[in-house]
Amino acid sequence: MKKKFLKGDMVFDTSVLVEIALATDDGREIIDEIVEGNITPYTTTLNVTEALYILCRLLGLEEARRRIGLIVNSKCFEIVSSDNVSLEAAECKCMFPVSIVDCHTLALSKKYGKPPLFYKVEKEFKRIVGKLESWIRNKIYFIVNSS
Image (cartoon, rainbow, N blue to C red):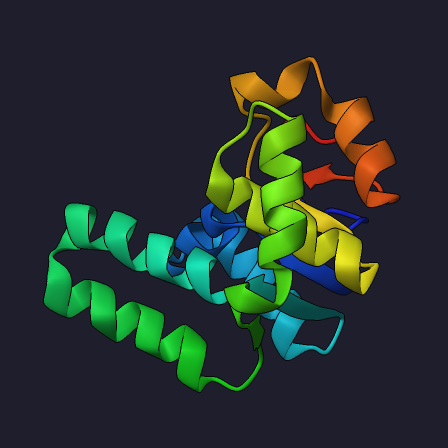
């Protein structure tokens, strides 16, 4: 099912990188949109590191490195050093009860003015999505249960 919001510049959370690396149905849809030039994905080095860790636990280190390497070496992703958003990420973590990695995603979104994409609404997000959107001055999109 084509998701209408998958277009333009978007900041990808770790969960989206994992979907892409695992080539799930949703991951393949996102890959197609990137290849067709409909999405320009942005992410941070910390998100890439976390994706590598998650894939390592699922697939082993060698396969995790291979799959993350395909993403990084594709030249389709704008991978921003986490150092560039560390102050905004710290501000986010101080203000909101979400993970520091999610704060890096949100900080990149805020600093670059691009909407973030997460796989699903995590429980810590449910009550504060509106506040997070106000803070980043953008809509937050979710692949699962998106509105």
